Amino acid sequence: MNPVTPRPKGRGFFRGINIFNFRFLPSLRAGASWSNGVNHEEAELIFRCQKGDQEALKEIFNQYHKKVYRIAYGVVRQREEALDIVQEVFIKLYRSIRNFKGKSKFYTYLYRMTINTAIDHVRKMERVRVSSLEEERFEPSEGAEKRPDSVLLHRELEEKVKAALEKLPGDQRMALIFREVEGLSYQEMAEAMGCSIGTVMSRLHYARKRIQELLKDEIKEERRG
Amino acid sequence: MKKSCSAISSLLEKYFDREVTDVERSHVEAHLLDCQACRDVLKSMGKLRDLVKTPVEEAVQKEDFPWVWQKIERGIRLEEKPPFWENLRSWLQISPLFQRRVWIPAVAAAAILLAVILPLLTQKIPSHPSPSVVEYVESQTHNVMVYELEKTKVTVIWLFEEPEKETPSS
View 1 (tube, each protein chain N blue to C red):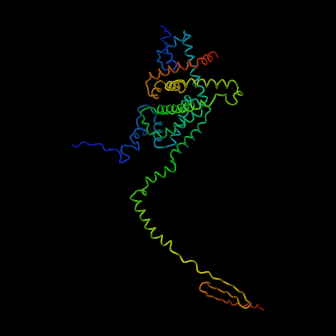
View 2: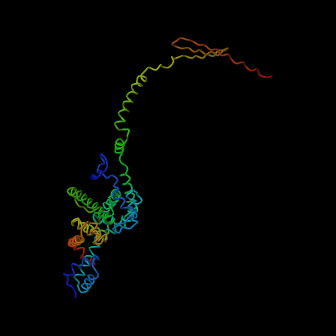
């Protein structure tokens, strides 16, 4: 009996390219079994979104935009940048949701995408800052002297927190943001960051230790207050 | 038996993050009752959380998210609509009109057609009839119209009789 040789996919240019990505779509069909505890409604939304339904994307946006914004703002600490990240994440999601195979929880997939986008933004911001450092000199912002003391102090404190966070290595910063801002469990953090729970705990521990050193004056002041 | 600070410190962070088991929680809480230093460590962690989280929550409250959704929609629409040149190029690649087996005969047919039509187009079309002069003369007795062709020197003269005047009825 002749051995059956697998037929190459496609012809000519399309050889080997699975243009329609049909492979994983059946696994996400609404009503299919989900091993990771994703609920039925979410599965339906994702399936619709994979078929290009923008209304489904809007529903996903309504469910997750604040979470994505919290992580983005937690990392970059700038309103405009954080909004850009939210925008970019949901456009990326719409474009690449076909690649979501339902193996992990949807929000960990979305958080991972948010982290990667935020890291890219931070890198861009750092590049811009380095190039503009030689040209610019720090000066108090316009009208700073007119603002009430409390607002200025608040702003100053926010700047110090931002500077301290920027001194942390990327993975430690992410661990801190996930835990302190978004309140994820160790298990959820491990899934989103693609590492073990032990690694998550270690990153979180070192992040806290470092940032407490950097902000020790602010922490003491607050405790006295 | 109460545990020492060094034994508790490894659990303190897990306790703060609510990741301890019931047994671990009871150990930590028993230790915290008598240990000011560990209570301070816990407070510091709480303060750190406030410093990191509060500005983020304030920013979330201020934000206008429907506007962000509109920007996302616009971004998707722009991505879905490729630029004109991309459209044209892909159309040229896909369209059967631009396949070699179609366009070579089409070009040949067009060339033949042009060869036939071009001489016809360039042929001198007779110009308008040679100019003529129309003169209209009104006389006492007749109306006269003179029509004269310039080239052939033909002159046509019409005499129009005046219509009979109606006699008023008496």
